Image (cartoon, rainbow, N blue to C red):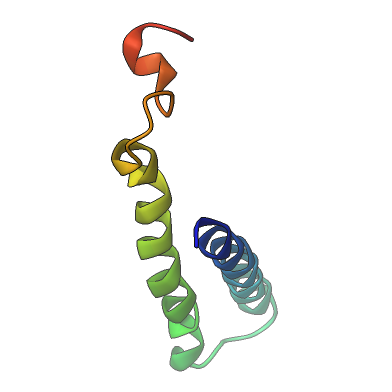
Length: 74
């Protein structure tokens, strides 16, 4: 499950970055329709929960070696 979430997050971040880059490139060329500025929102709606999951997953994994820095080991 964790590898699926990481893969979805990775590909969605690529799509999000391409959309944002196309908005900036389009703004340099012409005036874009307003709906074009809403295109990054669906990928962002996927990135937020998957990013939060990946951030908090080590804290709730139950493994003792998941957070070595928390016990003073770096």
